[in-house]
View (cartoon, rainbow, N blue to C red):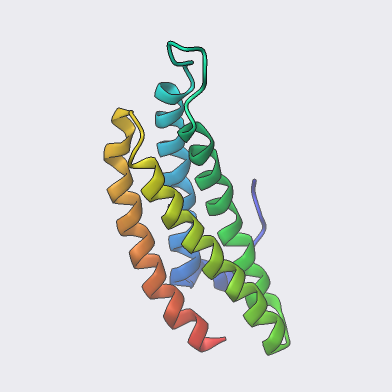
Length: 131
């Protein structure tokens, strides 16, 4: 999805990092889906295929939540959106760890995503203090 963002957000490091994470998760998910979408020999599907979609959905929501938090006037509402960003980040990290257990060559890229999420968390802490 393409969201129109205020021009000052392009200079906001957390927003830029959220867009990078979204791009990275889409690429990783695409790579993982190639290996995980095939049925197993017993006819069941790999349970990890859903986690690959989850990371894309969760990362896609980061940017809009940051935009909403920045656009809010009242501090209480800003913190509500900031809390949502924090929950999404935790879910992303958790699903990333789950995907590292899958049987795919794409799992080699997941440590890169976890490293990016760690940097995002640092930016997030600073950002939350400025709200």
